Image 1 (tube, helix red, strand yellow):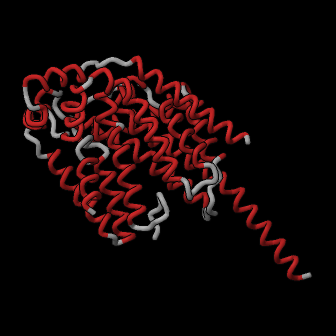
Image 2 (cartoon, one colour):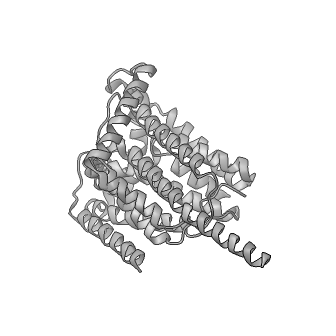
Length: 156
Length: 190
């Protein structure tokens, strides 16, 4: 019972972080990409002119300019939701209380970040550093299920 | 399998810091399972990583940053930065480590873990190595550390402490199993 309350408590804390994300505005590199998208092809310009990070450029150069405010405000909530979901799915068959583990680890991770704005709330920062963890989590889940392994395990 | 390749290709296109770790994990997975899904994912990751590394823009960016420091110097600074980060986490944000440990401890792993001390040592060593690696690559490539560059260090630290909590929790399972098997043997003797 206590553990259920703790799990709910963790989810409430994460909901607060998600709500905080609604006050975020495009900042620095976000604005640069929004301007870039108006005059040039972001992928080509970035690949030949600054960085080879094509996946980050896809999100920053094509998704962000579509609806800048909506994207930056919703992205933190989306990341929290998918982070908890993946941690839950990966640990469902390994621990007795996977929801507590998922919520608790995501909360602990957000608390551990020295600069929460740069790493999490800032769209360009979170796209470059947090999103690959998210994509790899999806990949690992898919590999585990496709290969008929227990979720999150390397053992056959 | 096409999805494995596509996800691998997509995951590799973000940060050069974390992609080698992805490649390592998937390579270990392929070695253990010999499944084609892992192989396709590995090919996608390697292809994506190559595309990122050979980009002409990397040279333009490198020219705009301070000159690259020597590998030994970057490693020294990475070790120092890792120690400072861990110390700050303990002194300034102890609730983080306490939360990570108790979350791991309260969750109760379902399987018994043998040789918990060995696994704890392996976890701590891998955690340290991971934090040092993430900061070293950033220092060597960018010349300095900013707030967002500690993202992977924070992730690894929380995972390490959470795993230690789980290992401590498995002691209860080990004890419960031993007690149950002892009782079964006593009943059999009677």
